[in-house]
Amino acid sequence: MKNKLSQLRDEFLRQLTEVKDEITLRELELKYLSRKGELGVLLRSLKDLSVDSRQAAGTMANEIKQELQDKFQEALKLFSARQTKNIPIDVTLPGAKMAFGHLHPITLIQNELEDLFTSLGFMILDGPELESDYYNFTALNVPASHPARDMQDTFYIDKKNKDGEYDLLLRTQTSPMQIRAMQKYGAPLKLIVPGRCFRNEATDARHEHTFYQMEGLVVAKDINFANLKSFLEIVGQKLFGPATKLRMRPKFFPFVEPGNNGEYTCFLCQGKGCRVCKNTGWLEIVGAGLVHPSVLEAGGLDPEVYSGLAFGFGLTRLAMLKYGINDVRFFQSGDLKFLEQF
Ligand code: PHE
Image (cartoon, rainbow, N blue to C red; front, top):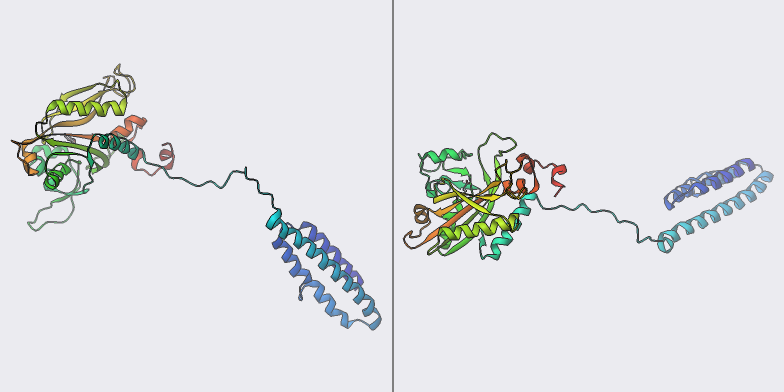
């Protein structure tokens, strides 16, 4: 019995030296010192001994019990003290890092342009991505049978209207908001419309079914081509720096007359010719023109009284140029390796 008791004592003390926290200390207490613990079992077995040996073993057992309980209490004090006041807190240690999100590259460009245009007194409008055939095409001077419809194929919604026609589609451009805005606010009017557009494209590094544009519209009395040119110059200088030059070349868009493509001197080579501008020195950035009289009419305005200018940027294209992104499909890929670079 005495042997067993001293073995138990040694084992307890050895394990006590290995205890590292309060939880393992409590486990040790449970294993040895609780009522059903090993010491308890030994104490209860004392009654089976002869009277003589019971007395000697009993004294020893009580001494050991006291000793182990003292040691346990001592250790317990140590751990709980550490937990409350004595833990030295090192305030210079780095904290747990929080994962921050950040803005998408297209949003960054959009914000930059919104800041510019609000500073020029433009309002910012949102518009429906699911548009009617009327607003996306017909009201913009592209009647149903017009070949200009071929320039922008899109996704039609598989639902007929009450006349048995498929007239809902994903908008191919932000231009339908020109009509909606004129109808709602009348003239004079200065607005931009950033937003998502869609086209039925065979996707590759330069074509994507989903992309972002920003439309601009100014309607008032006596708006002319010089106004358009000066707005586009301001935009180019904001986007690509004060030395940026603009050139305007004729281009057909059904809803403007005359229509043109605004090109800026390449921001990378300053017009000398490089990889980005395909050695031309110029970057095609913006479609623009004076608002076609039929479009003003569709917007409920009298073209004899009012005139307007309109322009449209590809925000996606701007982001590709600005950040040197060579594949348009990255924008929607959700690929963190791409996104975390911005
Ligand atoms: N909506 C035209 C496009 O998507 C761009 C544009 C806007 C052209 C406004 C002229 C005026 O190609």
